[in-house]
Length: 316
Image (tube, helix red, strand yellow):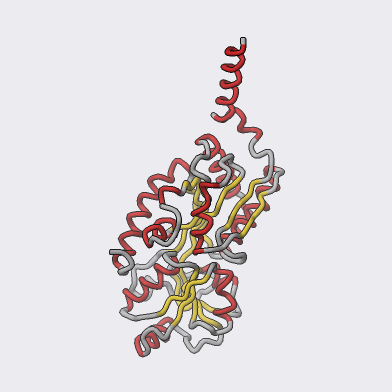
């Protein structure tokens, strides 16, 4: 009798983990950890998603900011967190590919388990409104005249901003100095106050800071309506359309069924018309890389990032 009951209980548990209990998930708040300071692109998007989540699922998505090591602090701790689907973390590319290769973080790329990527932000060089650099060519000339004197703030090391600065130096044959901050939100005051020459940031940052700062060039396919007079790198003769990708990841032991549920939930949030419009108007490119597409997506990005890092001299 005992054995029969044990078998029956085991079967019920297995069925729940396989997805039979999908309707009950989520039945409590989800902690959404952003590994950067408040005010950056990851944080802004997460708070939009939390609002849609609350309306759709009648539960809270609690956004927590834990900056450190350009995201590496949280990613190094992720696999020690509860693996029940109620703890997720924001994850960025190329960060999770390049940081472990640098060797100063406590995780490897294969330790991170993304379940969904939802947006992309294009690189943009931004300067204070009062900057003497009125055009991209002005900044390049100054960098050539005074090597390493031009300072560009960015979010983290071995990040999209860091890689973009190295690419700029290589493509233009110049030497600028990259100044890392904990996140996009942290670098705003330094750029606005003229403590650095400008920022290698993203298009959304330029839009948020419009009136205080202005972009000189963007790595978009075409000019954004918010800045019709700002050229793209391609217009200037450089094959540069790039930036950062953002998604969510879970602790590695999280059951496959729960990973799928979370991917489906994030996909549903990303289809909200109002949020998509808000993101697009804000300079974000909305994408939908679901769990089934993650392996091929990551493999392709990984190859490209490592090649870029080697080309920039960051890796041997």
